[in-house]
Image (cartoon, rainbow, N blue to C red; front, side, top):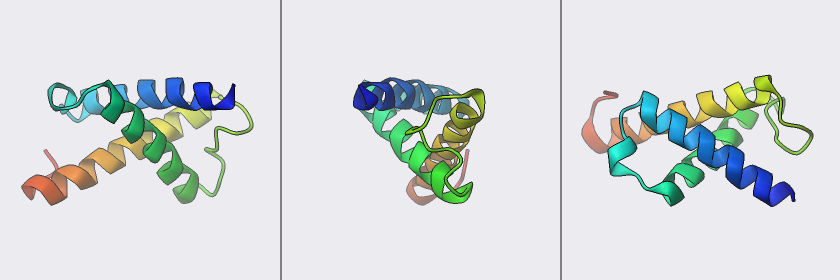
Amino acid sequence: MGLIIWLVVGGVCGWLASMVMRTDGQQGIVLNVIVGIVGAAIAGFIFGGSASLNNAITVQTFLYSLLGAIVLLAIVNLVRRGSVR
């Protein structure tokens, strides 16, 4: 059940991050999920584990995961295009 929650929350966070960074047209559902999950891992690393989805999904963990996904997309855009957009 935990894996399904990771996929759903990762997909939502990845999709919202791609909407914020205006990369939604370039990504599909699978890439949105991957961006969301990796973004949650980045947020867990940056915020010292308080964004871990293992315990519970709260507003705080969701926002941290969204922030991590946005940071990930900004880094990808910076490497790919030379600007954050």
